Amino acid sequence: MTFSIPFDNTFAQLDPLFYTKLAPEPVDAPKLRAFNRDLAHLLNISEGDSAEMAQAFGGNQLPTGADPLAQLYSGHQFGTYNPQLGDGRAILMGEVVGTDGIRRDIQLKGSGRTPYSRQGDGRAWLGPVLREYVVSEAMHALGVPTTRALAVVETGETVWRERGFPGAVLTRVAQSHLRVGSFQIFAVRGETEALKSLTQYAIDRHYPDAQGPMGLLKAVRDRQVALIAAWMGVGFIHGVMNTDNCTISGETIDYGPCAFMDEFHPNQVFSSIDRMGRYAYGNQPQIIVWNLAQLATALLQQMDAPEDAVEEATEIVHAMPDLLHAAWRETFRAKIGLATKEDGDEALITSLLDRMAQGQADFTNSFRALSDGAARDQFTDPEAFDTWEMDWRARLAREEDPDATMRAANPVFIPRNHRVEEMIAAAVAGDFSLFERMNRVLATPYDRQDADMDLARPPADSEVVNATFCGT
Image (cartoon, rainbow, N blue to C red; front, top):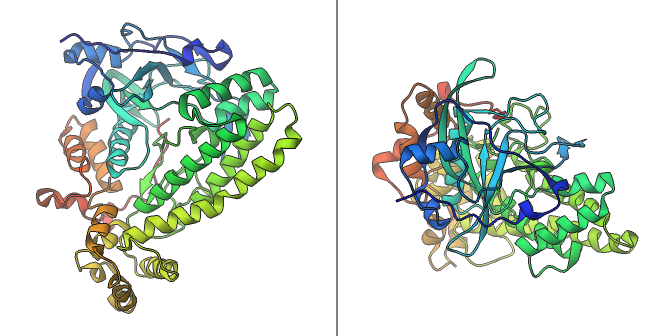
């Protein structure tokens, strides 16, 4: 079978204000290390031989129909506005319409310098590429909206960071790569016509029922509410919730210093660059409201009478905290087996979380063990769980099938930080077996897989990962 991608590009037809067209930089010796056949089938991609796909996904040979470009955007990074960012090490190859009718971008990440690279080399090394492949595919299997990974190519080149590492290119798939920062840059520059054009493009592509800029704002808000509730429910910490990492489509994007919690703590931070805890686990609902406010500010700049729309934009943004709280409540109701609603449910949830934090309980294993009858074993002081359990059991008695509810809401497997680090170290040494095993197990994270239960084990003291790092 001949390798082909059925490109159907639309963003590349917009005004060149939004991007710079250029091809990826070729690499020395591309070697295909991973190819996501299930995703390729969804995208109507015809698989070719390994060498041919390595050339394409490594950036050496453009597939027919590709129209490569680097997107322009800006963004707030840790609360400080950076007036120009853009794809500094990524090339959007083009778009495809999948078998499900959804349009998606295909992007090469680590594909070389662009006009937006600043002082960077535009490359990626193997570790962050494999991390993003494993974690993004795990997020998809967990039911969390996310970009996905189509392929990994080793480049045969050395990428220099604090030392030399093997280079790699990730092929990333997203419903689009439009971000809050995509709108901010044109609003700040006062380029109103460009802002109007981009707004209409986003509506047409993602929210065709939305009415104008405020309709777009509301639609983005609702997608982000669902996304953050899903993050909280699986103990995920993004680590860099800058506005340039906040998608209009409502997908998780940019798996740099991300992590899943082991022991539960609401103030948990892993990102090595988040020194003040701005993007800690428990702060994520507040930060997404802040990000939406930045989008509102940008969208208002295109209105003929922006002062008339300020009240509507304010109402949309101010409604978000309550929507987030309600979505969080529904997520955690399911995690403790509740399919119906009662007034005392939130107090029951927060009481458990408080005891988990005090008892150094593993987030994922504690919730999963609720349906297995072994949750008290997760606590350093099991009696703290016992006193909560009495109230919980009384509440469960009014539910029809709480065990089924809990098993559907609580995974057995997540990409444990120490296992991800172990996988990266092995792959750098040439052993991809743990990478392949993790992908296989994490594809069905809610199923108990007896032969692989070691991947559900929390880290020993010597294995604890205290910091994760940006892939740049």
